[in-house]
Image (tube, rainbow, N blue to C red; front, side):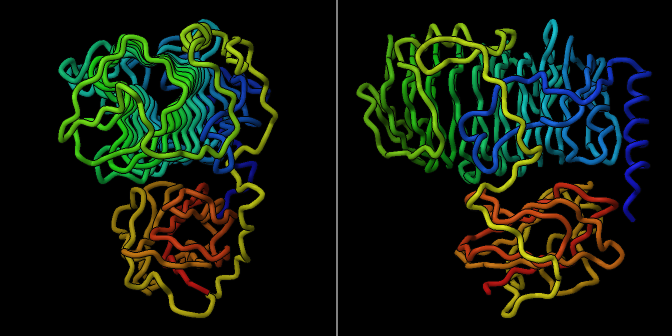
Length: 522
């Protein structure tokens, strides 16, 4: 049963009030976001990335207060801007429970949520040995913060050793004006500074510093994890990084106007079919800045307008295919968004004046000049389909004609509630069901070969009808939104040929339960 709005608001305010009483959180009225500028790069695609624009603004000085702000929202998708000031560490970061959050001790956990901005304000925000973990979430902005010395071994540990890590169906993240640092490599207990895996797409890292780490970051955790991609890296400083600047496995990456200094072993490592567009970057005092390294699974690149300043190259080998010394392109990559790159020659200067936390959020104007950011135009608080995206069909649960293509197909998804099974989504039995571990989650139907689908029916289990609220239906191969709406039922969209289709529950009341995820060609 849906709670009245007044009761849900009372519950949200009560959670925040408890956190305020414990210290570390200040409630403020809804106001313009302290975050500045608008998302760039691939984060502008798939409906865009607006974070918590339009939501309440809350000030937090502890990790527990950040969690409390997330948990105090009416739903897991209620927009919020969390202004952070001070040092966040293990001593002040604890799990907070609530129906709109899924948090954990010792890590800033953005899990199964959407429409959130975390921005450093005042004297600055430092996440000291505490990582930021984004999982099964969408429409997230992280801006103007420092994350340093996050370990995967030794003590204390957090977030698998990643400064910022994303995994499991993450969509639309903009990380901007951050400083991500380690104090060594894997032997010292550190892992990546900026990692994406397990179906993470539409991400931009801009105006940030990544330094003093064995690993800058990766897209894809293994040669078989190639469902990630559409990532932009621009106006970042990579300094004293051994490798992975970044490592791409599958997907598309766009790197422009970055300054690479002392890349010690390898830089942009495109492999396992990945395609990288590498343009107008400045590579300095570095080795093997572009190519396929440590594997025979080839990747590809288009290199234009880059400056090489004291760059050395290793010899080609069975598991080593450097792009240099002549940096010839091996593919072409089309970029779907507008951008104005600076000339490579001025990149060291403009990056030094704009990149990192505490730089006043200055950006380049595309003519090698640093300037204050342009204030964003308030937009939707959740990524929504663009003008060419289809409108969802009616929610009448009467199935279309034809064969239910889910019978005999495969299925998977996000964490499931105890006692449920992904197989129950496609067994033709309305008495069995799959349920997510929380109030949000996603489930997929998949086939071994390309299959044409034009409609879906989501059938809720007995006793849970009306629980599913906001949802999105995605082509999991391309990452695009096929339809979005509210409430379970029948969904129609233009005929699409794919191998995997995903139903994302962005909001719900009670415990959502899907008895059948039916798919039809007509």
